[in-house]
Image (tube, rainbow, N blue to C red):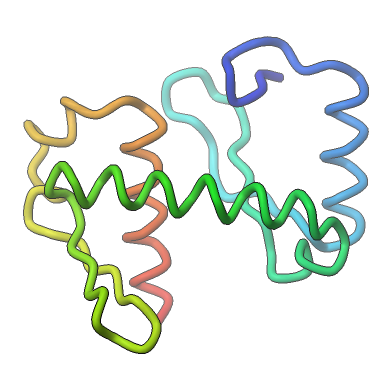
Length: 118
């Protein structure tokens, strides 16, 4: 199994993933179409199980969304009480999507998935 940096995961990392799944804080989100590895997403329970990891993840997600906004893949309504993120047409254009790093493309696909749930 590979970690987010594309390196083989250590036994400690595998144990942590197993622990978080068993505690209900992590779930399988899909399968990477390129290498077949599992993709995971946090559940709302991560905030109670590992608050520091939750905060680190939240900071990373916010940074990624701001980067996508700067490049025109999402819009953000900063004037709303809680900022609202919407996906732009650029995020549905295969040519534009092919220009993104794998992580950025995955972030947009996750935003699309979350939007469909509502």
